Length: 215
Image (cartoon, rainbow, N blue to C red; front, side, top):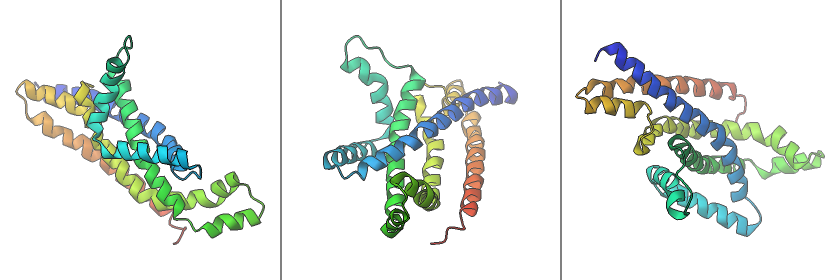
């Protein structure tokens, strides 16, 4: 099989990888913020439930969660079919990364001195205004580094989609290996390295833009 054919088929798999990556970020970031607020809630039962859920998700393998989301509904509830493979993977990824992001958000928010919120209230700002005008940008500045690490990890974790036969780039490479071609498996590294390189440059740019917020 020639180099061009392999490249085109890997590109098709890489499109699926990009779709999974993009949709996971789109839904897990806002969900992670909601979970973070739940974990910081003054309503103790809600706080306990949220923290327990985050502990379970962070304490179990993502691969297990993908399998559970795909097979679980059909096994637990009679008459319910399995989710489409890509949807199942996306749901598992969104839940998993939302929990990880929630801890980063929570750490960033709790690191802001309480005096800043109190000063906002003295100025007559409501809770939403205090968060959006005073807290938010400082939180973003604090969480850029840990968030970038998680997002780069997400790039590599997309390869776990192959566990339920979603045809992302590594699954395509494995199919070539089954046909006796080993080099496409290593060729995929170029795709990952370029993608991670672009993200690294992007996060470096964001960090510089936010550097005016000094500790």
